Length: 132
Image (cartoon, rainbow, N blue to C red; front, side):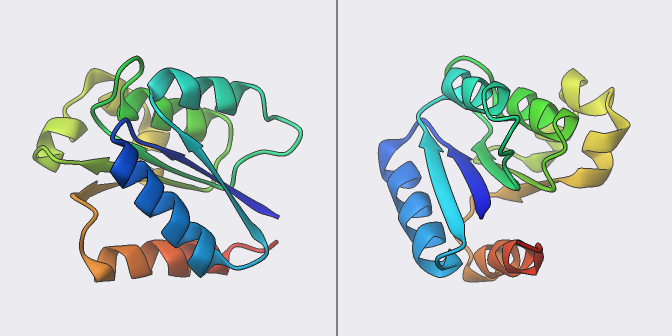
């Protein structure tokens, strides 16, 4: 089972991403939605026995922001980590938490407004490529 954590404080965006990944991912994908950064961090911390394989997080959320959630995901060995943002991706890359972690620079992809079908297709292709 490939577990996917989706974190977004906008309920419509969270619902759309959750439903789409769930529908596109097939039977071997379990999507777990979170409404903010605090909830996402709690989910990451309590699921060590059955870890997440992918995290898709909004950048600007109450509580922990997307860079902080991504940092924890990388620390816990999550294979695919994406930060979705409405702001210029350069601003996200300048976040001190992002810059001080070499693994973040290598493993985290920053998406500008995940609205493009091509971006979503890349995410789903990467998720499907993960071995069960």
